Length: 296
Image (tube, rainbow, N blue to C red):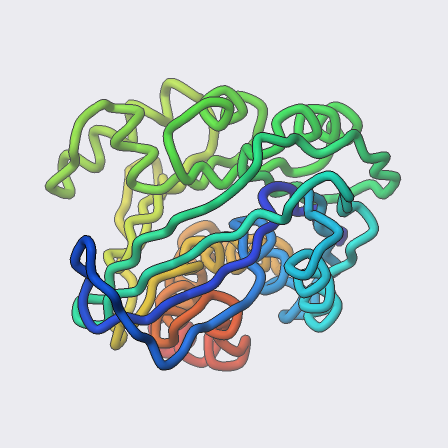
């Protein structure tokens, strides 16, 4: 099956810190972790690592960071035929501050307001994953591929992600998105179920909500059900949600039931937080499967 991942393609520079820095201070670090980033781009790399046929579409500059990103895609086996490489654009860069004392992260992304140009995508993907960063291209590809399974990574509650949720078959939303939709903080599992049902009825789509270390919620046997994750020694959650998305698509391709796929994807996301950085923390497929079999 062919998978097309479309959205933000950027470069991550992760800085591990022994506590969040105070304002107006100088701080010296001994290391930094660099790799490509972006929600759908990370999912694409995981899927390619797991042996799937995956293409990436997004915007990068013809610069140092853009060239590093292409080399990394090639290393994983992601096909870059549909990248827009624009000489007039500076590749988006994210600086990620990771507090080693409590595993929190703070991300500062520099992205120019510069949409990708129209690209002729001449494959017929079976699955399309978007993150809302390229709405015009997303709608164009959706229209050209009416039979494809269309999935959105609804990470933050803002336009155009809000409206694009109407155009897909499956919404995988973050807790932040769900709270934005309800305009309220969610504190209990019962509140989570009420909010889930409200959003699911509004969009009338299959819906999964990821809830960090707690796991994910989906509609199992007509009931919003929280599928718990596994406990791990957490260092950095960067990319964990992206890995969930990639693992979930892997499960779709390989015929997992919704509940089993959520278990599988929870495990993949959880295992990734044991290391700092996103793509260097991808779990091996064999490890995910082993823990999945034990969990079940």
